[in-house]
Image (cartoon, rainbow, N blue to C red; front, side, top):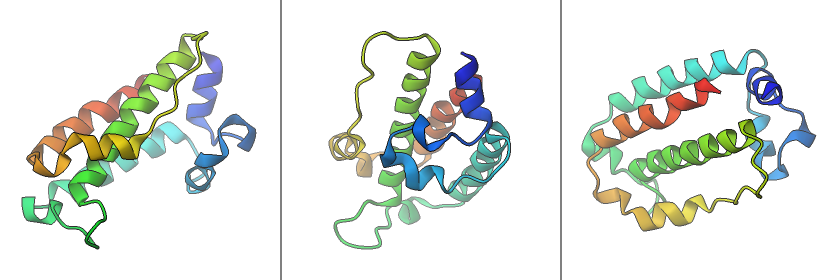
Length: 132
C-alpha cells in the first residue's frame, strides 16, 4: 500500500506506468498530486456546471465526441482507474484487464442522457480516488 501512496503523492517515474500514459503524466504539475487532483476536480466542476444542455451536445466536428461523450469517457476512465488502484492496493494476483474506453463510449449511448446526470456521476466516480 505504501507504493500506492507514493504514486499518488508524487509524479510517477516513467518505469512505473505504461508508455501509453506518458503524454498524460508529462502534463502533471510538480507537487502533491492529491492536492493537484482536488484542485482540478473543483475547476472542472465549475466549468461543466455552467454548460447548458445544448452546450453539452456540442461537437467540434461531425464524427467527434460531444462534450457529453467526453465527460462520459472521463467518468468511465475514473471508474477503471479506481478499480486498478483497488487491485494494486490489495495486491491482486490476477492480471488486471486492459480497458477499451472508446468502445464503452460508443456502447453507452451517452448522447441521449441528460447532461445534469454527468455532474452527479463525475462527482461519484472521482472522489474515491482520494481514498487511496
